[in-house]
Image 1 (cartoon, rainbow, N blue to C red):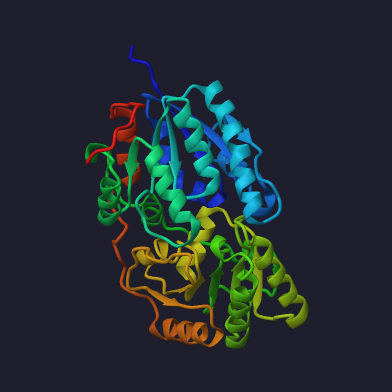
Image 2: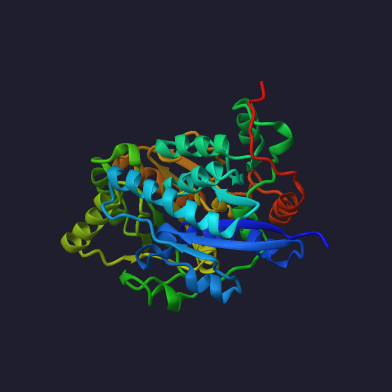
Length: 383
């Protein structure tokens, strides 16, 4: 009997779980796969939305938990977290002995896993390589690509960039976005009771127009993030539109944004905002579907909202260069410009659904390739 292929999937944040859930379900049901799941970094922290209960509720077994995130919210903490992660992932992979490690995107926790697996001669599969974005994340994304052996870009342009980076074309598969497939394959609903139970602030009636704000720190703009978030806070406050605001992720600069939000709440006592740290994936998509506009710098405005047709106002440089559909309006860190852009998007209303990132059966395709593709460890640059 042919041995099952041991596929180790790394989850380092709550949003990674939501965006990877369909792939995990496809791998779980395959008889030729021994699925291993390693949960690490902010995915284990209640502050940023621990995913342990979600994983267990959905029937997944967690094979390893890696505590690696250092507090500080600055570039030193990011660098040291990466160092701790390399050591911890090395131990985890050495114990689990996977055939292939699956990683996604561009986070510093993820490059730690890529380095560990590469040095252990384990094949690495990378989801969402080849995209162009702002900040240090783009450098990390491309570095993970060069450490990886199998590539799952989400669009044609990204596939071409990966090939230009010297990767073998036969190992670069344009499969579309599993994030968008997750949105497309389900009719999610959001619980108003849950929204107004979680977090702090005003009660939001989700049956009336409301904004969603997701503005994360920009690691290359440490020292300026508080100034930038203040512009957004005051723009939203002056517009007076009911708003559900998500706290920032764990990147360098997160303390600047968190302090800005706390100070704003104490000084202004806004009566039309509610602040949340986390929503389960299905609830989050249900919330996006109902929202009038997504404001901030999250990739959700670029990808999920493009398929949903939800207007998005993309602020600043974090998503600079990212492939965007017509639902996105780019704007700088200026209150007046942010207000104008939001008013424009609210007045426009829903956009036509975009399939820029959508491919049918993305998750099934990724799972099938992972089980059948020839694995290798020694890479060569392809001219």
